[in-house]
Each structure stands twice: as structure tokens, then as C-alpha cells.
Length: 135
Image 1 (cartoon, helix red, strand yellow):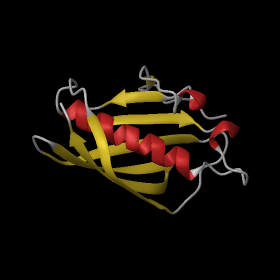
Image 2 (cartoon, helix red, strand yellow; image 1 turned 45 degrees about the horizontal axis):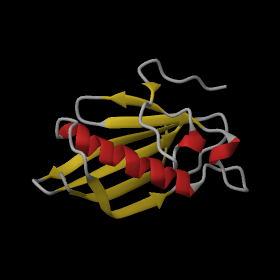
Image 3 (cartoon, rainbow, N blue to C red; image 1 turned 180 degrees about the vertical axis):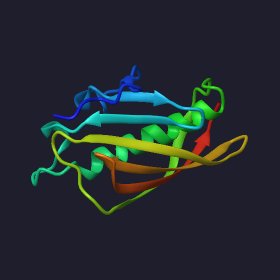
């Protein structure tokens, strides 16, 4: 069984959407806020692959948190206005799933981020998102 990398700690920001997928782990780096988890059956589709909806929701979350992190961590309103993903691999039960976002651009009222998503270090998807900053 895969173990959680030592630099990740339990993610403290829970929501009704992500609660069933916990435990989720986080790592705040200088330029990104990364999320990860050990894939379980609760994260998988009927074929036993990590579900694309789980990937999309957590990638959106990680990219928004990265924008907030880059802006000092005190934004109270960020909404996703565009989200796209390209899937090109699969994740399986027991693998370490990780999202590594990157802030592409930020302005006074908007931000753009992308992310590379992997399972056991192998890229399985990439994501792009645009956010509107409300406050």
C-alpha cells in the first residue's frame, strides 16, 4: 500500500463535496497549494479507475487554493468561471494521487491556473481554470 509523502499533512478545509473522499492531504509550497490522496474504491468508477469527476473537483479546488495562496491567503470569494481537463491516463486503488497546480496569471479581479495531475508519479491528466475574484 502506498504511503502519504511526509511533506503532506491532512487537508483542513473540508466541504460537503470532498468529505466523502477524505482523508485528503495538502502541501503548501512557495508557488502552489497541492492536494493528494491515496486512491480508494470511493474515488473510483465502475471499471475501478479513479473517476474523472473526482479528478475535476479536486483539481478545481487545488487551483483555486493556489490562487488564494498566491494572493496572501485572505481572499474570501473565488468562483470558477471556466474549467477544462484532458485525461490521458488512469489511477487505481492504492496509488498516490497528486495535483500540482501552477498560477499562470492573476489580476485584481481574476486569475488563471493550470495543474498537472498524477497517480504514483505518472501523469494522468492536466487541468486549466479561470477564476473570478469576488473579494
